[in-house]
Length: 297
Image 1 (spheres, rainbow, N blue to C red):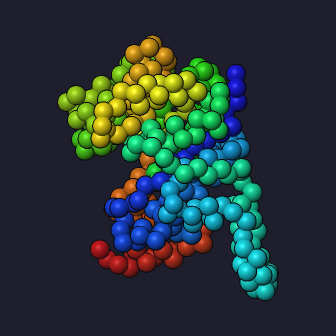
Image 2: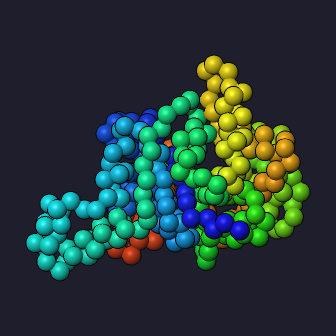
Image 3: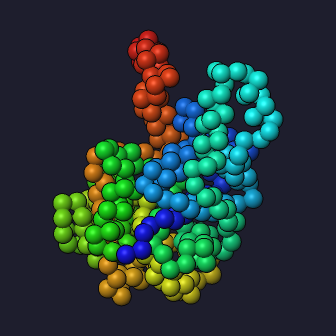
């Protein structure tokens, strides 16, 4: 079985929900305490054994490339002049640049989350890979979501959709839901995937979110979905998944164990994520906790 060593992160959107902040800064670079959102995703990928990370960007996303590049000579010199106290920051900057092989591709094609996949087809080749969003993640212990998903892939050899259980009625109007036979605890052999079905029409309570393992045959079904598009339609990866299911290709929806889902794609959920992770950050958690208590909200 081919080892999963590549991942794709789409990051070409304009982040309009965060304007005016995102006029000059990509939403993927919004900080959670002292680290941009996209770095959380990259570090999780690397810790799961991913070697090549392909980020699909637009012309306004150069800061993402700069972040994962080697630090500039000016920054290196500044940190060296700061003595021992600042050397840890230099070491961290160099670690970030060497975490993986970073490849950047400019997005071209119709609007929709299936287009970034078509843009990387030649780079992926005939290998399974991870496709994961740049503004949400599932924090899981003791094994990360990607480590868990790779284990499922290695056992079954097919596409795997990361999933979480719906917590509110609103979730059924926000996410896609998989339905089918439960073959293990929290593991569904999907027969249908319905986007934003509403609670009454949902095939299960398992929402497919955040990250996916795709086998390379996803590309031929994306081509089919592209050919089926009418003028003005958007191309979604789910369109390809539905064609795969129609062809009896196996797709599993897996509930991540020991995980919590963080969606930083809107202001309120982003702020909740910052607060929660700040309460875990070793540099600020105690003083921040005291600050929140003193607010007397």
